[in-house]
Length: 244
View (cartoon, rainbow, N blue to C red):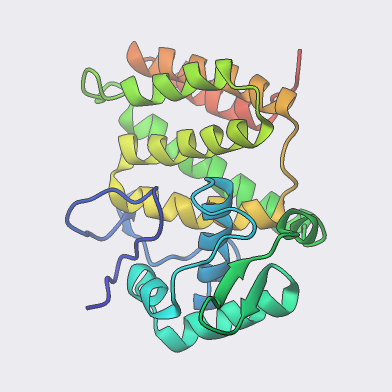
């Protein structure tokens, strides 16, 4: 049975599927400008899996039928999306007993050529709006201990040296923040946006990620004491964080 909410990769949390809402409006996967097509969903979710390092360049992807079940879309849509990604150089198709669809060894080099500053800026602004809304809505209502996992990610980022690990942890922070403040449906919504940004926006330098992590720490501190305005300011500061 196809899961209508979609689930793909380690960012999905177990539990009953329910319609996501943003400000009381049902999530119909409408992102800036237009809705995300099925092919774009496949591309964004694979990109997110690469960012989260659940698959790496050279790894084999699950079969199209499995991806279709996980994403809640038709298998033919998945096959067409994978073929398009092969044509773009993001994936490799191999035949034979050990064949299948693989993340291309040159994934990072190909992604570097696909950046779209205008669309990325629109999505980034949308993600900022989403997080500001979640923080404003959730401040003062976060149960005790509900932020412990997020704090653990902040602490791990402080210790991490590997640039890829830093990017993975930052992405997990934003997915888990959406989960903590909005639930599983909002986490899925955030995954759509972040996955697209993985392709459209150049990966930030490690020093920038560390500067952003200071904003993460400040955000959690303000959420913990129920201070809405400073918490929202911390979210906004994250977007413009620069190394000190």
